Figure 1: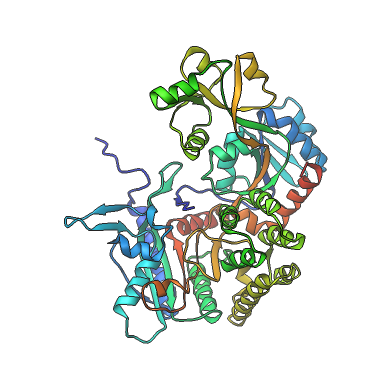
Figure 2: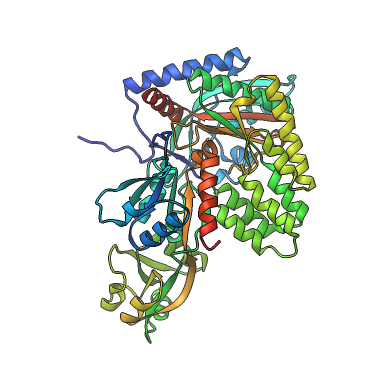
Length: 226
Length: 327
C-alpha cells in the first residue's frame, strides 16, 4: 500500500510514556486492564474532570476512541487503546497494531428492518442500497469488496433512526448484544467483521522506545484474553 | 480575493524558504564531500518508464496525455528517474556512479489529514556497488547528512526486505496468505500478522513462532543472535547479510547510529536486501528511507547492484525546529 507523505507532524517528547485511553464504552474495561497490569488507577475512576493522569511511569491521556489513532500516529501519544472498528474506519493511519486486548468485543454488521425486503428490492430495482452509517469508509469498502453498489449516507447520531423514517434501507453499525437493533425493529443481515480493543503504537516510538513499548505490551498481554 | 490551491500542495514564504535553502546547502555539501555529484531529471516522464521501475507504485502517480497523446506521469520518487538516467546516459561508462538530488516528487493520495501530494526530497543513489560495502557507504553518507542537518540524535533502522519473502517460501506458504502476511508487515499490523500465521495450515510450530517473533526483533547487534536462534535458512541468510553490513558500518565508525530491525518492510516494490528508515526522537513520523534495489537497474537493461536513500526535506526541517525547541 502506498501511504503517501503526511504533512503536519508533532514532537515526540521524551520522558514519560503517554498512553491514549478511550472514553466511552471502552473506558471502564480499559481502566480495569491497566489496573490488572499493576497500575493504581483510582484517580481515573473518580469524577475528576481532568483529561491527563500520571499513573506509575505512564501518563494516561483520555479522549474519544476515534481520536486515539490521530494522537498516536502523530506521536503526541506513544501508545493508545482503541477499537478495531475505529482502526478499520481509519485504515490509512500509519500506526503499529501491537496487541488484541480481547475486551470490547462486538461485530460490525449490515442490518435491515425485520421482515422488510427493501434492502434487496432497492438493489434489484434501483441499482443500489441506501445505507446509513457512522462508518462510511468501512461500509464503502465492504460493498465494494462484495461487488455491490450502495449509496452510503453518513450520520453522526443514532443510526437506527435512519431506516425507521426512510432515510435508508439499512444500516452498517457496530453491535454488541443486539438489543438496540431489536428495540428498533432491526435485525442482522450480514456480519462484516468482528472487533475488539487494540493496543496501538507510534511508528517512531516502536523503534526508539522499543523496550518500554514492549514491556507495557507484555504486561497488558498477560492480563487480557490473548 | 482568495484563490485556492489544490489540497496537498502549499506555498512557501521567505522565512521558511530561507531555512529550507540553508538545509539544502548543508545536505548538498555533505553529499559532495562524500564524492556524490548532483543530477536533475524532468518532473514529468513517460508513464511507461516509471511503471517499468515499480509496477505497484506507478498507479499512484499523476498521469496525463500530452498533445501527441503520449501518457506522461509526474515522478513519485527520484530513484526510478535516476535508474533511467544511468541506463541511458551512462550506458558505456564504468560504474560505480554516485549521484545526489534535491527535488520535488508527487504522489496521488487522497489529500486528507494533511498528506502532501507534492513534497521535497534530498537523497543519494550509489549504482554499481554491491552489498555490504555499497550499503554501508550509503548509510555512512546518510549519517553525515543527518549530522549536517544537526540531527545528531537521529537513528537509522536497518532491515532486510528479502527476509520474510524468503522465509515464507522456505516454509512453503502459498501466494495468497504469503501476500497477506507481507501486507500486514508493511502496514505494521502485528495483530493481523499473528492471526494470519495462526491460520496457516501444515507448518511447524517453530516456523509459526519465527514468523511472529521476527517482526518484533529490533535493537543492537544482539538481535542477530536472537533471530538465528529461531532457525531456518532464510533467517540464517538474512542474518548473515545484516551482520556483514553491520560489521562494515562498525569499520566506518557509524554502527552506533543504526538499529537492526528484522520486522522492517517498506511498501515500495523494488527493494531487495537491505532497507533503511530514519527516525528522530523529536518527530513522530519517519524522516526518510531507502535501501538496496539490486534488480531495478536490470529492468532498464543495465543490471547493476544499487542502493540509496531519500530524506523528506520538509520533515527534516520540522525535526530541526523541534530539536532546537527541545534543547
